[in-house]
Image 1 (spheres, rainbow, N blue to C red):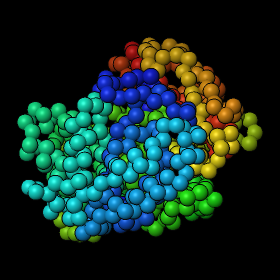
Image 2: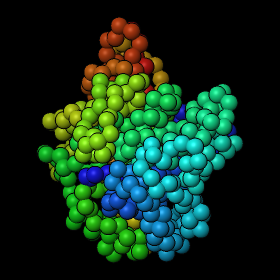
Image 3: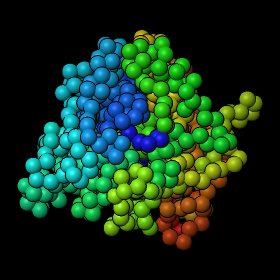
Length: 484
């Protein structure tokens, strides 16, 4: 709960081993599914329930390992696993239809077995000797499994259940084993919603941790999911859009998606980049994806009012680099009624929230299509296209050399598709724009490598969008190394 509340074709060695590849009937590329446990203060506000509804629609492509009810600064003395089970019950009523679209969806019973709870205590008062809980033990059980894939902990509220798991781990295991297991963890917390996050980051300095530290939610990347941005179309986050595409006439699961109270789905960015859409590589938060883009840096200081958000507990400066806010300069592609069908907008915007809202229409359309899967036959619903590169996903060119980016695409529904290429300067080391020689909406495009004084990388993204209803997008990323 919150107050207002991609190199395609590259398989990381650390994801091998126990990971089983999945080729979704929905068109996702074959790759290991990401393991994930959710910590949620569901019941404190509506957005956790909203995020749970969306998440269950992606359990065919994310290996969900736990749904743990926790506390937060907004819900300090109780936990509500029953509310998680209520959403799962609605999922159970549409499961038979979902598996028509992808047989990888887990059963209601499987999901129910993943519901656990942390202690009904706030922050560090729930961490220490004798403070183990069903939730903290469940984290340790999954962390110690013989599975080489990382274990993502996405935190929608307070993080003290993870803090207790780490406390017990350090108290019960040799230092080398603690280090090995901590190296498997990936944490994304939606800001700091109790005082245990700072303790974790200080006590386990090697832990992979994404957060906007402190409590100034308005400065956080994740708010890009629901912020109204001047000068762009914000329709896909409107209450009317949610009512028409999610809540009404979309079966039992859509019906349990509550109205927005403070902000639509502030917790969803914590796991959006784990969806295998060809754009993001979860091991590289600095490459960007549906869940935003982040840089590894030591923030200058905490932000926000601890009196308002953390009950007066001081927010101390960070002691080491963490994955935190990064900004993108974005000119959203625009559709033209005549001439070139898709072209970049004229006026770019630079902002940390832009690292999420630049993808917003794509992931909202994807959500709407998945919700249709709960009630529509396969032939009556849309499924995402699959872009396929006609060249390696990484190659090297010399300064001044012409080079080509080329791909084709398939679509499971036989839909016509549109292509659009663009550079992602912030994701590479070469930060300047490289002009396209031809129109960017062709299946192959040409560029000229700029002059560099040392090797530099430039990231290019292919976005393929079908013309189904709603239109769905998938991506490929090419990393070009430019040498002098």
